Structures are given as C-alpha cells and as structure tokens.
Image (cartoon, rainbow, N blue to C red):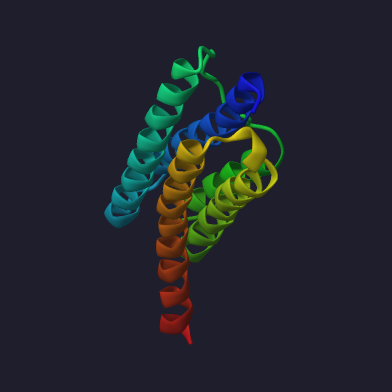
Length: 154
C-alpha cells in the first residue's frame, strides 16, 4: 500500500464532499421552501462529517488535505440544474437534480472502494463504507421525496 496513492484516493473523496457542501449551500440560498432548506442543511452536515474524517486520515498519513471542489463535469452540471429548477420553483425538478448529484457521490464512493482496495487499509475501507452508507441514505431520502411527488400527481 503506497501512502501517496492512499492520500490521493482520500483527497478525491474530500473533493466530492466539498462539491456536495458547496452545491447544497447554493441550493439552500436559492429555495424558499423550508423543508428543502432543512434537507439541504442535513446533507451539508453529512458531508462535513465525512470531510472531517477524511481530512483527519490524510493528515495522519502526512498528506495535505484537498481544499477545493471539482466544479467540472457532472457536478457542475448538477448544481446548474438545481439552480435552474429552484429559479423555476419546480420541486420535482429540484429533487431530480439533487438525486442525480447524489448518484454521482454514491457512485464515486462505490468506484473508489471497488477500484482502490489495495491502496486502502482495512480501517480506511471500513470508514469509507460507513461514509458511503450515509451518502446513500441521503440519496434515498431525495429519491423518496421525488417519488412521493410522482405518486401525488398521478
């Protein structure tokens, strides 16, 4: 297990959590719906917790924790979609965009765990599995809220 590779893997997940934090902070400012503000605040807390744990691990390994966000590709498009949906006050579109963003985060954790197992200690794998479960739970909440709208409108 190469320490530098482990640091890179953990830093990539710090970046994903930074993206989630920034995205939901933006979304929260754009909506006036209190239940969405509450939901976004809870998702921010999830990513802040994950980020703190990842930063601790990178620091323990002697690395420099990632500070930034990706804000390229998929995540950037997701938050632009969320912002557009919020501007139009389209609740279903907001939740669909959030769900897509959560898909990206969950898939990033899944891919990291699948493709980097040799670069992660058992403790790191346990930590990342626990974080992936938290983010998956957030995903499932968004999906459930979105699905309930579909049922109501049927």
